[in-house]
Length: 421
Ligand code: AMP
Ligand code: GLY
Image (cartoon, rainbow, N blue to C red):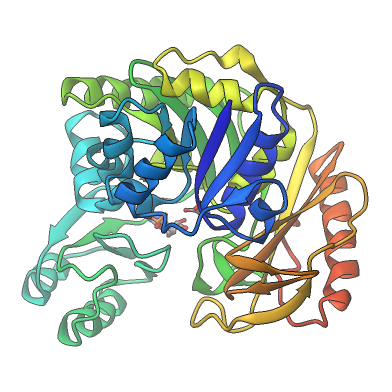
């Protein structure tokens, strides 16, 4: 089958790498793709959100399966357009994608369907926020409603600190994502883990789990980012993690989606806080994580293209893939100013010559002969497998350190990914 991957980040490079290796896959295409996807297939110069152009080219090129990578494509309704035209598409419709694109919708959905999540108050103005904070006890998590690439959440230690954030957002029209709705949430205590479930419109099965590192600096300091590293499988979580998630979160979520007329096809990414009282949902996303996808893909055996196609066609066949009993650690190499700004880096070597078991996935970039021009931000994710998370971590950092000097030390990275387990 011929598979189109929509998006241009390291997540999409990892998806394209695993799809290209699937026995059933005869060709991979990407829109718009990056330097990595260009090395194994054809890139189309079409934006990830341009549903019209994607549909037209998909038809012309006789694509059998489209895989939506980023939330922007889902929120732009690319899935609706392709499915309406009868094209097998992995990734939810815009309405299902609201579980990610609107934190207010998502919170209300969880409340309606009894899914464990932090208690929250929704406000629309600074005055309302001040009222809500009047008798607030303890820390307050301030969350902007819309898509803000991981930058719309501030964990404030108390109401006074939350008030400062809200004053800045409202007074300066700077609510991330551009809306006016903000959630004020109680802070959950526990350990974070992300569980990736796959839906085919009728069923929803947990597939794999990973932990990511969202803050820019070592020791979880600095601003929130899209993610600076990840590892899989998560260490030291209960052995029945998937059973608990299925029972407490996926079953009510699926019932709720179906009751609301939503046939959810694609990944339901459950960002969880594992508390003393079991898993609570911090957020839902409607797609694979970045960089979580980069550490999940190397662990997959079997036919990933058939697996995603079975979900897209409404008959999910989990037997198409298995996860290796190996661990994978991924380290993101970013430009020093990320996430504040992203400065392009030109002339990086295209052939990164990594040791066996290590992989490099390009972020937004383009191939230029023997070199790659990175558009900045999260330029590369370097992953490595190992028999344990500790081994994988050693292998990943060996690869990163060797590479970093070859890249002229132009990129920075966290040195403590998977060190705390
Ligand atoms: P989100 O974009 O909702 O995933 O939030 C980004 C990060 O903020 C999460 O990964 C958590 O580390 C933190 N966070 C969000 N909500 C909460 C909460 N209710 N309690 C504790 N930490 C939270
Ligand atoms: N790594 C977090 C995300 O993809 O949302």
